Image (cartoon, rainbow, N blue to C red; front, side, top):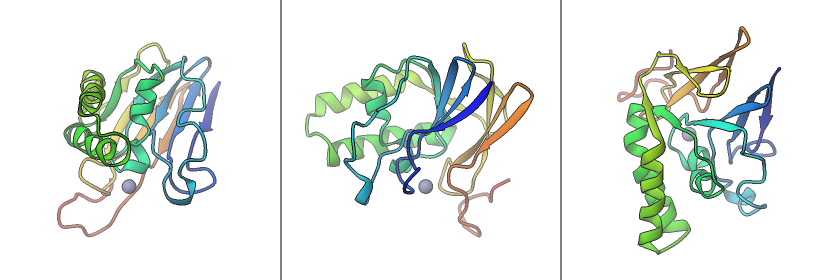
Length: 179
Ligand SMILES: [Zn+2]
């Protein structure tokens, strides 16, 4: 059975984190931080992660990736799929976010970034990627939002589901429009 659960961006627009579950395994699409009036509303990871086989990152804005260090801290050991440009940008974005908003402990920040680097699996756009130990596959497509942004197509049980992430802005001189 294919199910979609939401662990963020439900009552507001920040904290984007969605789960696609197929039978007893699942993946997360984004793991964003709650910001503004939604910030600090509870523990960062308040859902089960034992059955989560992978995280797919749509883009590196903090409301889509800011809870990633907490996910690693909670024991998540799966691959982190993202586009090739996002894989280059993500460590810098999280280093900034951790150093400004969380800790001045440089050694701790380095440990998180080393762990992150060991899990990152950059994917080319338009190429299906099977998820280990989960009967589904994912494919990134250009979302035209920021450098490296993607929307995610997922296929499971002959169904295709699309997680948009953020789409556009149109007419950017730097970005290919969503396709
Ligand atoms: Zn965004």
